[in-house]
Length: 454
Image 1 (cartoon, helix red, strand yellow):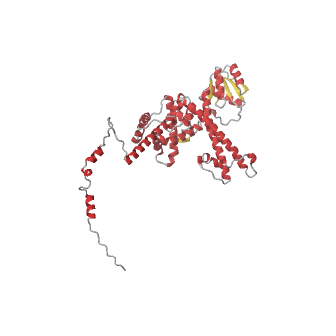
Image 2 (cartoon, rainbow, N blue to C red):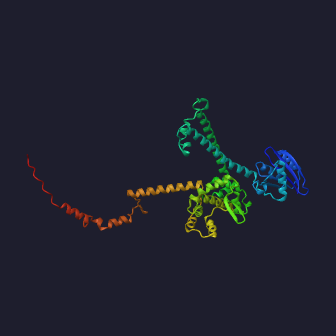
């Protein structure tokens, strides 16, 4: 078996031609360019091309497959890739070890997404990069005002209603004196902030346009508490759901499983491994906290794991984040949307389900998107106005009168009853208050004393 092992570098790469039968090797150093690798793949008759997972491995893997070679992109996080007590480390030694481990079958390949999906994943990551730059710029602006003893609004108010107050201190750097140079720096940072905000808006609009045409993103968003940003990151990371055999592999892929140390009778679990994409792990935990407000199933899982203990709140949130990732993977694998009844069946298969949680899931309404929510709010506002108008008309006594086909008005039942009652016909005949009033007015008045003139 002839193996071509590539130790990739930013500028130069080392190619190791290894024959597993004769154990002979040959090394070639080549620039990391498409032209040079194209010539090597065209002239080489290798049964397997092995390379490590890194930045340029994507297009090099596509180029090798285009030339008809079988490729293996190996993960550098595996135990077989870690060499201890190595006295000499060179690019040739790395390429040779890569070829020998591939011949022994010790390397584990990783999933290589398509070019379109790699670009989508890069755009999702770049949105978070722009968001981080905006936060960094805002913190720098706040630091200048704090250092000069000037108060500005807290939170997001400073960048909306309080933006005029901040702009009043900006000044071009060329017009600043020796004691107000910070105003020139503030002007530069505010210009950068406006530009970054505009660019972030453009990136978000592009992601939303992609999400409207992607059924996978729409499917993941049906989970209550999962928004478009979380759905985009989950789809970008999972890509092909069939490459995972079970939910345990999905949990390990996101690094949400505990570390394990087992030796003899000792079997200890520690903190989570934190392997995989840190952005996906972060957004999953944020989604877990947000889903407590919208998803009764998530709230039930959180309360069951937390057990009303303050020290277990974060552990329960991480466990809920792992469950959300596994549910999203299962929905993508089975091509099914979120179904509360399915969650009831799955939960009851492991044990008894609380009655309150079961009732809340059965009566749970389907999740709404932005347009559906606006339409529902408009209908509710219209119904509230109509109810208020009906209540106001009742209080003023202007009840609508039903008319017959001939146009004559019919009195209501209450009015007919009121007109036929004897109290209405003779209100002063036998009523008790009128008798009291008569006896009260029949009392004789006191005689006034005569006024004697002085």
